[in-house]
Amino acid sequence: MARAAGYRLRGYDSIGSTNSEAIEAATAGDLGGIWFAARQQTAGRGRRGRQWESPHGNLAATLLIVPEADPTLAATLGFVAGVSLNRALSAILPGGLVKIGIDGADALEGKSRIALKWPNDVLADGAKLAGILLEASKLPDGRHAIAIGFGVNVVAAPEGLPYPATSLADLGVSLSAEDVFEALGDAWVETFGLWNDGRGIGDVLKHWRASAAGIGAPVAVNQNGDVLRGIFETIDDAGRLIVRAEDNRRIAITAGDVHFGATASARS
Ligand SMILES: O=C(O)CCCC[C@@H]1SC[C@@H]2NC(=O)N[C@@H]21
Image (tube, rainbow, N blue to C red):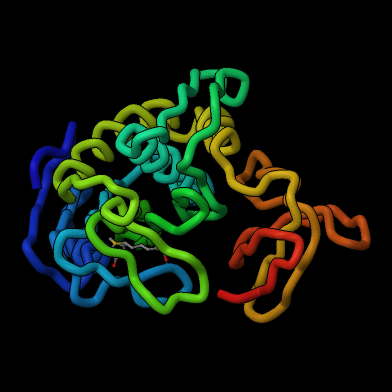
């Protein structure tokens, strides 16, 4: 892999899972500021215990960091990851570029082809292009090592999923995983600076909301088989999904699978 602005880099041609490698390194006392990037994963992991396909040529990269922020704030790094990936991919995809000023939604210009889907997906033209998996491991000194895993479908998208998926190649972009990694590394440094040990989470969330898919639209949220239907109102300042339920209750959701549309089913 090419370059990892501001961090150490461990590159692999093929590996089981960059997230597993990062957590193992942290457990062995390697304390962060390291990117683990691979051209292929043989045991890639997705959210909620799912498998993540990482054929040769797609990007699999994990950043291992040990933030000073407390664990609740550290969990908001998923939004830093989403905003970073959104910035990197919006700059890469023709017609994907949207100018987002530091003040968030007010500075949004035009409409991007790239959107963020709560909690951790990146969509292109409505289909899943990339996913993020955030995992934490408690260190002996009480701090938490955070592994932030990014999977981007660069050359191929998985088939047979219950939702649409796409790749940069499908979208007519012929870039390498190295190119995408470089763009992601730069966008991460910028967005992580904005996060500022958690003090800037409000600004990060403004950016996230400005690129969010489905705000104001019908949504179905599947929480381990329980399905909540309503209108997706916003993401609150803790990063929770706020749904106005059909019985008018305002419900804050911390985990679940989201499906958009008036006929949103609760497929995962
Ligand atoms: O959408 C999801 O379910 C999250 C996918 C996260 C995949 C990435 S690829 C790099 C890192 N290593 C893994 O095993 N998973 C994450």
